[in-house]
Image (cartoon, rainbow, N blue to C red):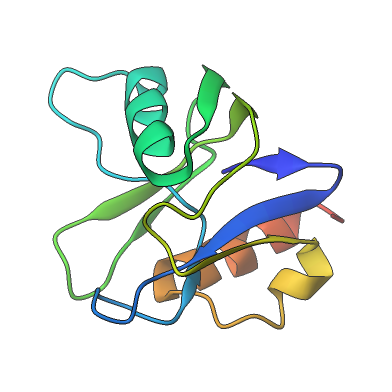
Length: 121
C-alpha cells in the first residue's frame, strides 16, 4: 500500500485477469523465504518500476473469496514515479475517492474494515 500526501496509489486490473477492470492496491505474492520488504521490492519494481525503500508489517489480512489467497496489506515507502507496467491504468485517490471507485472485493473489504475505520484520509 503506497500513500503520498493523503492519496493512495491504486491500479486498474487488466480485463483478462481475475477481477479485470476493477481497481486494487498494487502488490503481489510473497514467495517462500521472502520478507515483506523483499517481496515489495520485487513486485513493485516489476509492476510499477518503483524502488521500495521500506516495508512495515501488514496492517490487515483479507481472504480473497474464491481463491486460495489471503491478501496482506503492507504499507511501503517507495522512490520514483509509478508506471503502469502490468496494469491498464494508475491513479492516486483520496480516501473519499476510494469509496466511490470499483475496487476488487478484497481491496473493498480492506477499505471498509481498516482504512475507513482507522483513518480520516
